Every structure is written in C-alpha cells, then in structure tokens.
Length: 266
Image 1 (tube, rainbow, N blue to C red):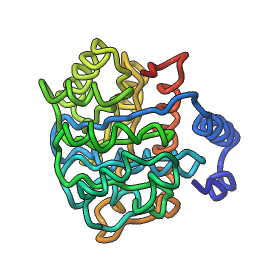
Image 2: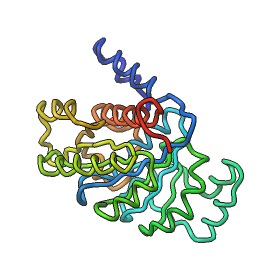
Image 3: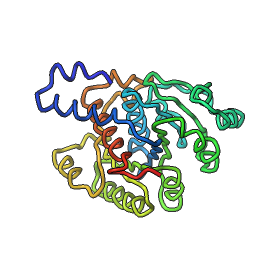
C-alpha cells in the first residue's frame, strides 16, 4: 500500500499510527495463517472485507492466497483486483496438491493487481476445500477464504478450516450482536474470532467507534466506499485514504491475531 500521500498530509499522531500499523502488518509469523471470512447475512461486505484484507497483506510482502467459496461475481477475488476468470478444475486441484514448491503451486493461479494469488472454487463444497486448498496453504503466509453467510452447522466447517475467523456485520445493533454471538461460538471452538463492522448505509458515528473499543473480541471497521460498486475492480492503491486506512487497521488486527502471543495457530 502506497502511504506517501497519507504521510504528506498527516498530522503527527496519524504518522505515528501509520508507522505502528505498517510495522505490525509486515510482521512475519512462524506458521501459515488460514483466515475464514463469514457474514451474518448477505450483502454486508464480506467480499469487500476479505479482498481488502488480502490486498493490504500482499502489499506488505506476504504471500497471500485468496479463495472464493461463496457466490461468484464481485467476490473477494474481484475486490483484490482480479477480473473474472475460469474456475479451478479438478485436474488443476490435483496438480497443485502434488506441488513441492511455491512456484509449482502458483503455476496457473491468476495474480491480481494487488499481488494476491486467486483461486475460484465455483462452489461452496467444504469437502473440495479440504482436498484442494488445505494441502497448499502451507506455501502461503495467509490463506483467506470467503465463505459467504454461515451459521449453525456450517459454522463448524469454517472453524475447522481456519485459524482465524472474521465475522462481518453492518453497523446495525441486532447484526453486530449476532456477530458477537458468533464470535463467542468461534472462540469456544478454539479459534480466534475477529469482528468487522461495515457501513453499507453510511450510518457511521463516533458511537460506533467507541463500541469497537468495547468489543470482547478483536474488532475493526471498514469504511463505506463507492469504489466497491464500480464495474471494474480498482487497485487498492487507488482507493480513498479512509478505505486504505481501514484496510490497514484490519490487516494489523489480523496479524496480531495470528501471533502466538495474542492469537491461536493450529
């Protein structure tokens, strides 16, 4: 992420925050992290959250694999800067599973403008994720999977496939309460939950910022951005400052959750 413009116009406290967040996001971890992203309902910004998260992590030098296990269209792959492409085939799956190097496993995987490697499953079959994705996550620093909306028995599948589960909800009290409840279930399952609050109705107020600080789990906010509704994917470097800052804060939250001292690596 190019922070030059932000630094030029930033107040001293903002420069200090940027420096701190940049250092946190660049931190390396001993093991690969698998991040599952779910929404409390459709249309809350799950794909936006996952795509922005992956773009920022890749821009800070991490090897990132983005996996779409949700609906096609403007998935996390699109929000990572990758136009639509043909889904992975079973033959592709078998070849990658047998790979013995990073070059082999990424051969044929589209590379988005953000630097994220993209894998389109074209379905949400959990068995296929375990077969096609789980064996290759060891080659990446972060594997981010967009699962769409999940709850109940489906939630168990996501927790089994992730070390960190990000729950996305809009800035509405019932939805955020639901997200916190899901985060509690994820925590009890032995995984690290992160709550993300989006702003699809442009209703963000300082009270929501205070609420994030009081969350019982790590939490972040994704700013509203009209760019997410454009016809073509836009590079994360060309997003407004507020969006890039919220993406940087989210990525820092994820990297902290991935550290053995604060998160759970399994």
